[in-house]
Image (cartoon, rainbow, N blue to C red; front, side):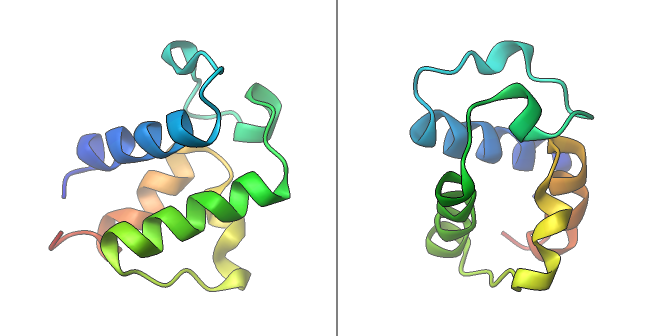
Amino acid sequence: MAPAEIRQVIIGILSKIAPDEDLSSLDDTKPFREQMELDSMDFLDIVMELRKAYRIQIPEEDYFHLGTMQSTVEYLTPLLKDA
């Protein structure tokens, strides 16, 4: 899966978790929590959606990689290369 496709997957997950958020102006370099009203449960929902959809495990110690869209895509690119 290409980085642009991964970004769209994350946008889709975020739109399910926070349906009232305007994701069209999301800055890929800023933390999600600075741009959206996400709490820790919402963050775990992102991880769970990725696990359900793509059967990937994200260890808790790697959660910091999922702070921004840019870092999330970079982290997931090797994990989803064959998806």
